[in-house]
Amino acid sequence: MKFEWTEAMSTGIEEIDNEHRTLFAWINRLSEANATGTGEHEVMRVLSFLGIYASKHFAHEEDCFARHVCPHAELNRKAHREFVTHFAHVKAECEAHGVTETKAMELQEWLGQWLQDHILRVDSTIRPFVP
Ligand SMILES: [Fe+2]
Ligand SMILES: [Fe+2]
Image (spheres, rainbow, N blue to C red):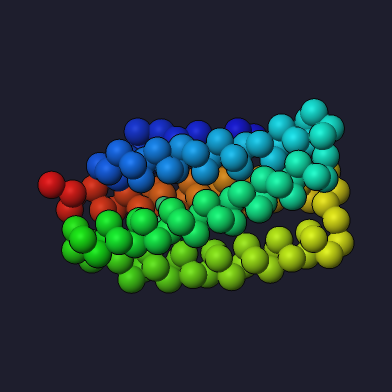
């Protein structure tokens, strides 16, 4: 399944919306890597990129939540921290045990679903606070 940014996910901050689009594009690469059979190496490359990019995005977004005094700042920060911890665990497991096609598909589904839900439930709540 492909994940896509939709208008309902708008935060009112162009840069943040673009970062979300970039995250979806890279998450979708996990299923493409499988479909084209470029395999395990590509999956690990995508995971490495996502880990770095997501951390930068979270920091940027947390700054925006603070700057616009969004009341959901703490909820957002907490969700990011939990994700980062879980992601690091999953990535380390992939590095230690390798990635099967099934595993890569599960990863893509989990990451896409998490991001979609998180943007809709938390990130987009900043919209009314952006002037
Ligand atoms: Fe967030
Ligand atoms: Fe976000």
